[in-house]
Length: 325
Length: 258
Ligand SMILES: Nc1ncnc2c1ncn2[C@@H]1O[C@H](COP(=O)(O)OP(=O)(O)OP(=O)(O)O)[C@@H](O)[C@H]1O
Ligand SMILES: [Mg+2]
Image 1: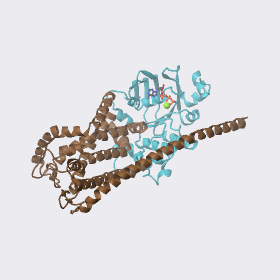
Image 2 (image 1 turned 180 degrees about the vertical axis):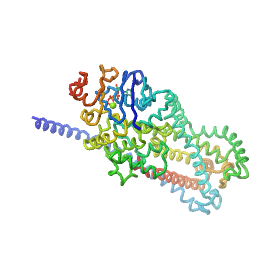
Image 3 (image 1 turned 30 degrees about the horizontal axis):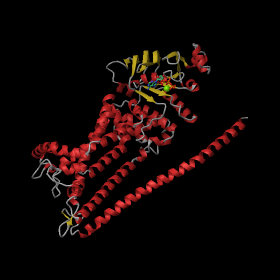
Image 4 (image 1 turned 90 degrees about the horizontal axis):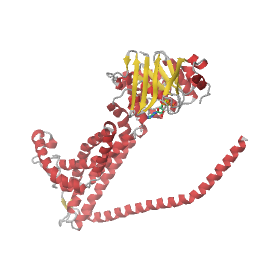
């Protein structure tokens, strides 16, 4: 009797499954075709963009009389075009890295506060405000930075220069509000919400069992965070920081508004001036001639490569300790 | 090291609902006390009141007294963190820290207590892993992740982590419920061998296990569905399993429950 019911059950199940598979196959095929189709379309679009950009960039690169990678000049529309990206790369990386250094600890602190310290009602309100900050358009940050923040930063810069001028970063001959540091602070404010809200999501996913394990060992709240939360969230925090860095690297309008672009590379971060890829494109594309546009597109390709490398580095960092997560 | 626990007039709440009602009992040092009873009668809740883990759940609170020798754990001057350092806990599901190696898992509590130096830590880690019957299986891979062990090994790792700090009391909430019979036996042996140093309280659904490992058994029950859990009786394990005073206890252990 048992074997009978077993067999019946088995054939019943098989029959059911067979029918299921039959109807499922049509849906599977449609789904497969549509996903494959969209993947191909996406690749085609990317390829088309790449071909267009490279086709525009190559003639300018060929005409360049200076070294494209190491020159600090930017005169692509001159009779004898001379231009290079060194200064742009420096300004971009410098402002973005400073922004990251300023924003990450603050953002993670906010995320920890929301996830572990604040009372529950305050937590949801704060989380909402942080998400709201992420939705502010960058041109608004730019306006605010220029109108409100630059004058304030001018006095901060004077103070730093006068009292801490012996630190090489704060040295130099002239200081002012429209400096790389100001751009970095504005960028930091812009990337803070994304780092903070991703970190918070990651922290909220820490298994309760691990938190309780730490508590039961007699960990204080901060020790729980150090033992169970931060290690668990490490790769998530790195991803969050890298997303923020990506946004900072590519940020255009706010930087273009805040910086008073000037030529030259200087480690004196209080000096007015500096330039970035994106700001340079935004500021000069409209007035550029044919050669100038090609040069700007070439610089855009370099920015793209830099962003790509940053992303790959981030993945490598995340993967390195994967075994433990 | 091992200390006596004296519980009196203990009530525990989750928000407005009372989960256990008016529990009074004594847990003798250097002995194993088992809590048995149907699901939902508050065994885990009671266990968690003993190291002040109950109150980490939002809205949860406790009334009553728990004396550890002479110290009231719920006294106003007592720091719950200090209580948890003195009273170790092993959970139902093995919960090693996933980001830590085997070594670091065992050393986690030691580091909290300020033990420093790889050499000193190494000694205690080895001793604890030996104590938890796990040393031979992991001694060649102490730097591998703790989460890479089997379930039974992970549970013994958690026991090693708990005993590394030499707690005065060891609380175990169904420590074998996720394990196979062989790992279960290993852990039961371990409990027997830890008994002469620690006060042990174990929650279990397995009657044979309670009969095998414990000296004293407490039976808990609900008066009715939705009512708080109460202690029905507590006595020598032998007596509970052969000749309990209460009818409800007899019904439960002979399987005529409900
Ligand atoms: N986090 C919680 N929030 C609210 N109520 C809870 C919580 N944990 C447990 N309870 C309730 O408290 C009562 C006792 O639960 P407890 O987990 O202590 O029972 P238990 O005896 O350990 O059961 P089991 O044998 O199934 O583990 C139950 O009614 C349960 O629903
Ligand atoms: Mg339980």
